[in-house]
Length: 261
Image 1 (cartoon, rainbow, N blue to C red):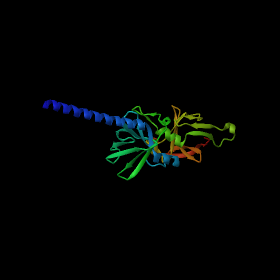
Image 2: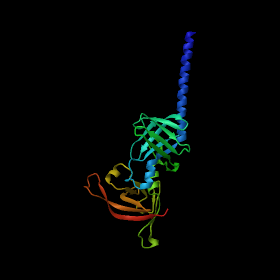
Image 3: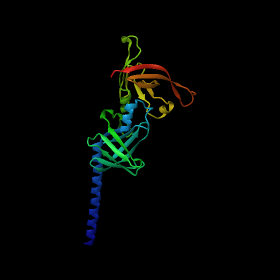
Image 4: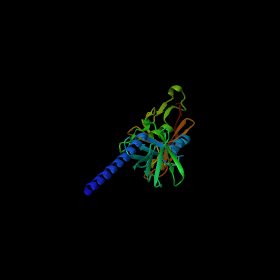
């Protein structure tokens, strides 16, 4: 009889552990369903709209990605590595990440309207927030099959829109251009796509904002400035030896255009 009770106790304990584990896993799944989508640093988002330049910003565009049913949060910095972190639910609208930063653990909280995700960086006594991105921005496919929104969001904030060429003598000869958030480009006869330099090697080539135009075969890089709805493109010149890593400086104006919408 004593042996029977020992087996009964062991079986009950195993069942309890299984149930607790299942509840924890379900809780993580529930919070990922609630957070599903892409979130971008609010400070970065606000600064981008204000500065209208990549070079005037400090730090990288930090993005958090959640997929329904997953217990993993993916973090990505534009131009830097993507890496996963395990999430643990703390409550109906919160979860915990261990070793997210220099704190031992970080508790994230979702706002009542579901549009702002925040945490306290305890070591530095600072609060950070992330804003929910529209699903339409989540198009850049990552190696894990998930989709990032950072590039499309940056394009939309900085350059996306329709433009008219400045300086044309006659309206009939004036060119029109469209920069789309997906990186496609209309009106530029030589090129069909553009990409804004957000980091990496291109960022170290020049201390000014750079943009790359391509048609799939050929490409050309320019310095760009945006002010009062006017986009100015400059040629760039390599000022060091041709066999060295390029150091670029802005040259003559290539084209000016004004945004119409």
